[in-house]
Amino acid sequence: DEFVASFRRSLHEYTHANPVHLRKYLPKDFVLDILRRTQAIVAKEATLVEIIPDHTDPDVVVVGDTHGQFHDVCELFRVAGDPSQSKRYIVNGDMVDRGAWGLETLLLFCVHKLKIPDHVHIIRGNHETATCAIMYGFKQEVETKYGKTAGKSIFAACKQLFKALPLAALISRNTLVLHGGLFRHTARAGQKRKHTEDFVVGSIDDLRHGSKGGLDPSGFGQSKLAADVLWSDPAKESGFKENDGRGIGMVFGPEVTECFLRENKLKLIIRSHEGPDAREARPEMPNMLEGYTTDHETSEGVLMTVFSAPDYPQFINPDASRYKNKAAVFILKAPDYINPEIRQFEAVLPRPHVTPYYDLDVPDSDSDEFEQLGADVSGMSDTSHAAGIEGEEVAS
Image (tube, rainbow, N blue to C red; front, side, top):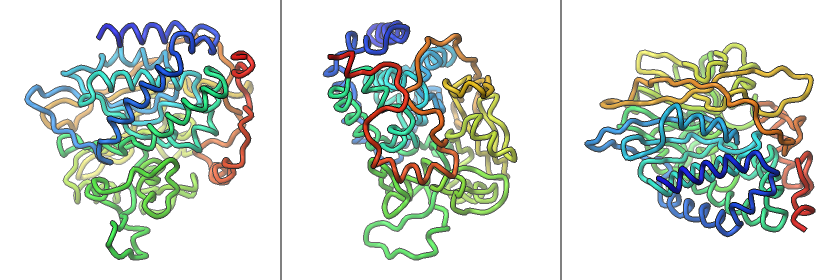
């Protein structure tokens, strides 16, 4: 407990300093040790983590996207309480990118995971993939803070951790937590694939036996399920179809959610994945200004979205208006874990001044331009678009 508290305080202190000073507090080998130890734990976890609360009946805190907004994560812990034997945490992906402190945020969650691995569960988001982490700043952030050579080693360890993360969590057989949304059925090894499976909704059993997707789930072959879980979105209109808005994943209507809940004997689905900017582009859906939404209410149960990055995104173009959104976490309680207690919180402002680690004009991952840019990312040079400090120059 004392180490974790001291670690958090020190990280907080260093966010107010020149970014390259982080390496003085956290040497490369120490960072690699945290990442690799965490990877070793999550690699042994299944694609679907199944949580059956024990006789102590601990609360379960579900955290949405945090996107490198470290000071807001510290506020989140203040509002919801720290992970403990009486308080499980599920971190529902998108810890990195866009914000200036993705590495600090990731390491803090990892340290909590190492402390009580059975009570802290880190779920993969679409930004815990190689392509997004390059396009939206995380790679450049790491290389700025540690220099090109050490930064490459740390980023490589992050990618290995990302591909080992589970895709979903099932709580008390009633509540499913996953980052994006519902997914297509995938034939298992030895099973004959049918073309109609492209539009057949998957099941909890598919999650249990599915692949974690590799470095960059593409939506093809055995990575199809992972890509859907990471990228899919609920829709107001009925149907189950390809997500043309993103170029990857699916969109699904209320009747699809209702059928999935019924067939899998669930009462609640919690997802994240969409902030206020994404919902502004989809005005038919509830906005995300309160940090959460109820997207599908059916006779079988509910699908909700939780978003835990207030005043998001951290960086905007000078001519843009801020959303000033609240953030939220869900707290699920015994005995059934199906009625979330919603705790909201505001951003911790002002934030320390940092220059963005990515080009603010890069197409948003919610847009139809993202697919083509993602396809081109393998040809991108390692030269940064917009970094606060030239990491290698400072290191030398």
